[in-house]
Image (cartoon, rainbow, N blue to C red; front, side, top):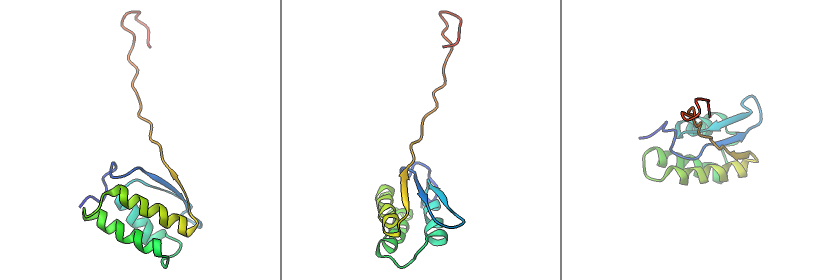
Length: 103
């Protein structure tokens, strides 16, 4: 089971209502916690599908990106705005050895 692998799927930022207003879902564990504890409604068809897809992804039955698609459908059903989180890779700049000055 892979609850908290950060590379499991492309992170999603969700804008919820109430005390937990903004959440970034990076892992299957984050998603499970959000769906069970912070989701505004637990009776939608897409919500139920997302919960099942989360369990299936955690147990390795489906690809985590497939779960992400189910999560986005559930967010749409619940009126939750969702954004893809783009992670930038930090590139270390090396000094230019030819000139002796930093690049």
